[in-house]
Image 1 (cartoon, chains in turn cyan, orange):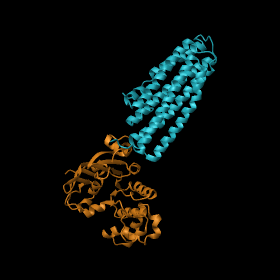
Image 2 (cartoon, rainbow over the protein chains, first blue to last red):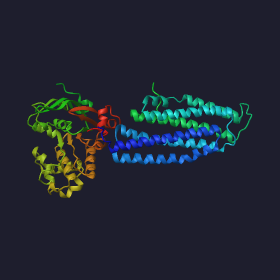
Image 3 (cartoon, rainbow over the protein chains, first blue to last red):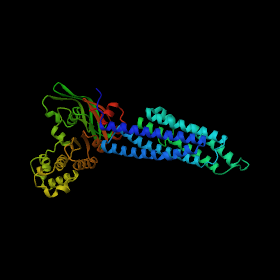
Image 4 (cartoon, helix red, strand yellow):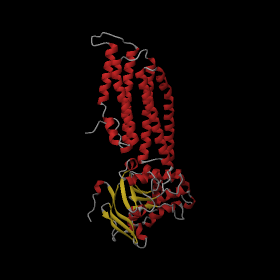
Length: 228
Length: 258
């Protein structure tokens, strides 16, 4: 016979479900923002901007649920770590949602698509961000602490890709080393802002992996250098 | 038996404690150190042996017919679990507060003065000073200073319990054992008892049995988890309540069993 769930267990399940729902909503926003940028599709981008309110509402809902869970049940051990981890997660998820919205806003303002050679480098960074996001959420979903540790320690490739994309943007829009300007304007600025937004998404994905590690292992690895 | 190194800060050490109620073994091979000036909480489900273990520490179980304790209990380097131990003197050193407040049917003053008189103190001025000091240490003096010569039975439950703490403190124990001291009290009275414990630990070593996980987390420095007569895990309270080493501990403190 299955044991009846306690109120605490029910609330924890509800909290986990809401965090995963928010994760899915943010994942969709990212995919849509990236697709809109690649297609230079302003309508699709505008939908991402509009959809950010729903993500913000989920954050508020999860905050309230976590607060209520703490007040009613005073969880300890893994349960407490889960609630603390969830609260940290939703903060990062909301900011990733904001970054998706800001990429979408920049897409709306683009008068012409980013040139192919710029888009190629930005696209590489974009796909890394998308993949990192999926992997970080997966470490949380599956409670895979070794994958979480690997993810949050492995950011050299992201930095390299961002530098390459920024260089491509600068070369194309701002001119080469001779200082010969080509087409600097909003497009150049937008290209830079998009690269920075993608980098911030990657950093927040690393944060999510850190939270997943904390929930599983009870050890905070924020702001700590890699061991060994 | 070699005395342990008390310089390490261990006030009391239980070594290989087995305890039997007749043929029933209630405790199995308990080894636990109690650091000086710290609060150690003993937690575990009902019947796990934590109160039995607590009573071993000042030989209160000697009063139970058919009870037998084996192993060593080292207090300041001396094994107290021997027939030569003067248990009256031991209980003066290792005081106890019980679950239900049990003041004597006497005045507030006489409740606290009683232990002093039993121990041979006759000077009224000394007794008066010590009664006041004990009531202050138990954080109750200001509340009842105008009622010192009225019956202790007229006090509220929380006040009676703090009076019992004052009574235990009057004979200047070095260790205080508390068996669920706040389980019958309302939140305000509980908070006052917990404040007293926090204040007292600078002068005493305190060992408290509690069923209230939040209370253990609030007031103790170390926590020991008992289950079915065995000590399962012990350690620093913050660690025990955030990342215990053993699944069994985690399942108990998160309410998944017990």
